[in-house]
Each structure stands twice: as C-alpha cells, then as structure tokens.
Length: 499
Ligand code: GLU
Image 1 (cartoon, rainbow, N blue to C red):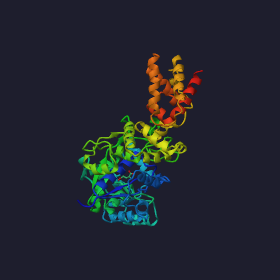
Image 2 (image 1 turned 60 degrees about the horizontal axis):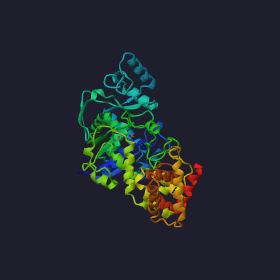
Image 3 (image 1 turned 90 degrees about the vertical axis):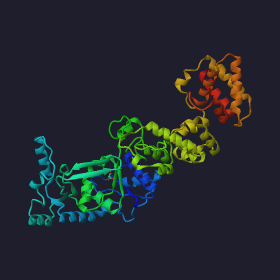
Image 4 (image 1 turned 45 degrees about the vertical axis):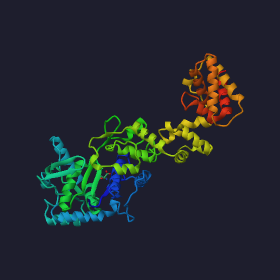
C-alpha cells in the first residue's frame, strides 16, 4: 500500500465539538494502524466566522485526548489563510484553461434574481442555464473584463461546472454513487475578499499535502461530486473518501447539539470553553480521555472481536475503516459513563489519586495514605472522577446534614439501637482501622437477635448516623475506616438529634 496520510481539517469557528473530535479520532486511528501520518490543517478561510482562541483550543483538545499530531508546520502553512496566493494562482490556472471564470455580479443583482425565481416558485442556480445571461468573463468581451480587473472592481472566480457529465463517486463506507453534473452550480472558488472557498482550498491542499484518505463527517458528502470535478479539472488523482455517520441527539432527533447537552446536563466539548457552556467539558466533568476515545470510537464502529473496553493502543490495533457503518449513531451519555467507570476501575490507585486531587481540591486536605484506601473502597461505584469525593466525603468528615428522606425512616427503636451501638463502640479504646468494623457490627447484630430487633433496622440507623443518608459502602468497612472513636461520636450525634 502506498503511504497513508490523513488530515483533520477543522475550521476555527468555535470549540471542538464531540462530532469533530470523533472525526479526528477516526483519522488518528486509521493513520496509526497503517503506520501513516496524521496531520492537522486549520481551514480558516472564512474570516468572518473565525473565533479567537479556537485554534489553540483544537490543539489543546487533541493533546488531552492523546492524539499526537505528526505534521503541523512551524511556518504557519497548516493555516489555509497563509496560503492565499497559492489558491489564487491555482484559480488563474483554471481560468486560463477555460475551466473557471471571473464573475462580476453584485450581491444585490444575485439577490434580486433569487427573489424573482422564488416568485416563480423556482430556485435560482448560477450554472449552465443562467450563466449566459450574467455578468461574467464568459459573457463580457476581453477588454471589458480587463478593464474591470484593472479598476479593481469586485469579482469572484467561479468554477465552470461541466454539463451532462456523469460524476462517479466512491466512498469507502457508503459505496459507489453517481451524480449528474448539470445539477451542480458554478461554485465560487475565490471569494470577493480574495480568499478561497472551503471547496477550492480543501481540494488543492489535499492534493498538495499528498493526502491518501479523506475521512470526514457525513455533512460533506453532498460536496463530494464537486470535489471530484475539481480533481478532474486539475487532472489530479483524487484521494480515497470515507464519510463518517452523523452523531445525533440522545433521542435520535437532529444532530447532537450543545443545546441538548445543556438541557440534559452533559458536555459536548472535550474541555471547558470560556463561558460558553454552563456544563464545561468532558475533562471538567470527570471523564478520562481514554474513556472518551473509547466511547467515541463506538459511534459508528465496533470491534470485530466484540470487545467494548479498549485503550488507545487496542483501538489502533482493532480499528478498521471498512467496518465503519453509514447509519447515524445516537449519543448515549449513560453508556459513556459506563465506559468511563470501566476505565476508572482499570486504573491504579496511585494514578487515580493524582487525577482526583486535581479535580477535587478538597482531597488535598486529607492524608494521602487514607485517601488511597478510600479510593479503593469506592472505586467500583464511581462513574466519573468527580464522583469520588462525593462518594467518600463521609469517610473523612461526619455528615453535616441528615437527609430528610432518611430521617423519616427512624423510629422509637432507633434510639435504643443508637444507645446500644454507642455503648459497644465507646467501650473500646481501640482506634486502629483493622477489622474493627467486623467485630463491632457483629456484636451489635448479636444484641439485635437477643432483643428481637430486626438487623435491617439497625443497619439502616447506623448508616444514617455514619453517612447522613441511605447510601454508601458496606457498614463494616465504614467503621473500620473511621475507627471506633469516630463511630461512637457519630452515633451520639444522631441520638442527640432525635432528642
Ligand atoms: N473545514 C471542514 C470542517 O470543519 C473540513 C471538512 C473536510 O474534512 O473536508 O468540517
């Protein structure tokens, strides 16, 4: 196979959304699987839509996800805006060869035509049907054109789209197709500000950067025929194409949007983006980049061996572009949480501690050794890094509040239970953490049996005293962790509350 070179070509118009990030990932996996090159090109030709900081955000996000960029020029040539002259020269080349032309129609003229057609219930298209009646270098004589250019009158360069030509397309995911070129308009190649359009710059760059495979979102599929025509105009071999399936909102309606993330409470960006979203990014929400990559890979693809939890290197090994499906994938936040939970349990406690301390500064105040034990105790239950502190806080601090729905479950008997627990716990001076829980709870259960008190009632009362609610890990483990002295103190507090 010849050299594999792929590119991720975002426009810096805002933060990188999970849709774009998944495109980057599939490019990255394909490149790494085939010992190829993954390059990033910034498509910044639409200056009006450019957003400050977006480019930096894109590179930061790729870095956080562990997608190393193999090619990113130091001379800015990865930014299309720095290659303006090149595109203009290429446009001139096509004009010379009669494959493109200057058009001088003003925006008002075109708008008027659109309205006129609209009234006739038709759509105005600048193409073989209409171009003969418009103001362009095909209808004007040479002198007129030269004079317009000499006077720096505004112009665009349009592609002379051939008529009645069957354009064959081939997509690695969707198979073959064909389109009648007569249906395509004479697309603008160079805009009035001298910048190339997306289509023109994209095709030229993919050729000049020797891209072997164009892997991008499905929204670009309708442009494929035009791109093929441009390759043909330049007499270049087109790369291979793969258009990835859309990612839809969880309910399957519409493309996944920030709005639906905001309203359902999940992020859509890898990292937080200024004040743009109240939710922040996946990083701030406690997701591991490994888990996000793993989940994103499942949006349109599945490993042939059925394996669901994979590291980046496993993804690279198993990824196959041919097995990407064309059907759109619904974003499933619950599944991402599950994948994250699996990755969290696979991490060492040391590595977890480092990340937890970073995301939950409260953990800075607890002793490192105890933090490690607590991590181990709650590990199986945490779906995100943020969950850890929420799940372990009561191990370090007595509950400040008792949940109303827990308190209402207490009865007259609860007092006797608390008293007895206190008696057993406070009688012991032992505060070591080893197996205290076991001995204490067993002794209390023995008392229950003798006094005709249900074990469940005792357990629930103790849980409320230790945790402040009805959740939490095994009681024996809680007692072992907090020690009998603290156990005694917590039982006393709840008893006092009951009066
Ligand atoms: N700049 C385009 C985008 O942001 C790139 C499309 C392509 O990969 O060709 O989606």
